Length: 204
Image 1 (cartoon, rainbow, N blue to C red):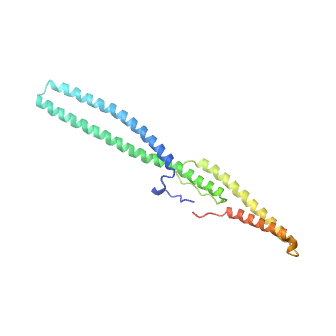
Image 2 (tube, helix red, strand yellow):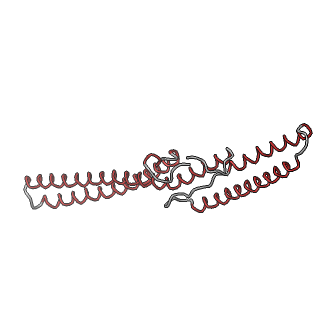
């Protein structure tokens, strides 16, 4: 099974889910930032125009041009700051979205691996999910189900072992006379080994 440690190599365990959810968060953030930024910048420009109009009555033409240039420079700086803030917000939301979805995708990835192992006949013990991951309650229920399957497999293996031992005790005399019973014992032994093997830990 995969390591419990987080790393950049396994941060995108479910690319489709994680990138789609993150893209949705980025789109919403970008729309809100653009809308609020448009309103804010419009108000800034309106204030600048009012200042220019008031200045016309008391300033020379040269002074008015200088004031106009200064106001435009300040407005451009505010616009650049707004664009920079929007870009930073997109980066923060993207990183946060990937990390948040990873805390859901991680447990689901692990559960999917364990389910595939069960399908292949392995009931190896289940490890813990990482601290900070989501779906702890769901994972606990899955573990209960998995442990129940392990307990049943262990009981079946014990019963098979008892049946094999009982059959072996009754085997005596000529081999030809008990050939059918020998075959049954071998089949039981094979099944019992499969049950025991399904309970052993698997290599990562």
